[in-house]
Image (cartoon, rainbow, N blue to C red; front, side):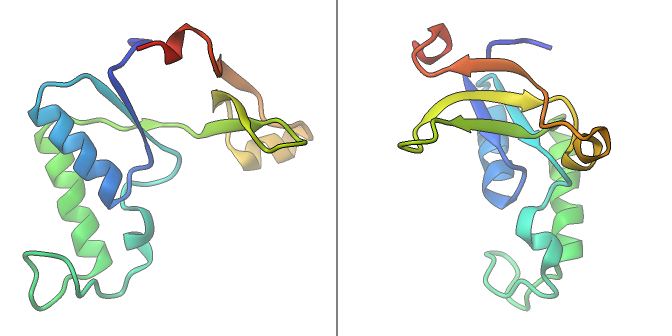
Length: 129
């Protein structure tokens, strides 16, 4: 996996997938992270009534199937991982970002906190693009 990308997209909901599709069409290197399944909140929708192109509405299940098909067509493969934000306690400022090395349920079983990799502290070279 390439460790340097022009863009990082966190979340595979409608907005994250639309961003990935546009970046792919523009030939811009990116990485799409999704911790669960593609679709975001649409996974919970019985009927989406305000989405362009579907005047009668579309079920969340059908919308997600079309979204996945679109990503597959463009060969966009989301990285299944959770992004961790580390905050300084007193002021709540973000001081680092990283990828979880296991999901929350796995960490609970081990009776440990989240184990992370690729931590980038605010101000290190990754932010100087």
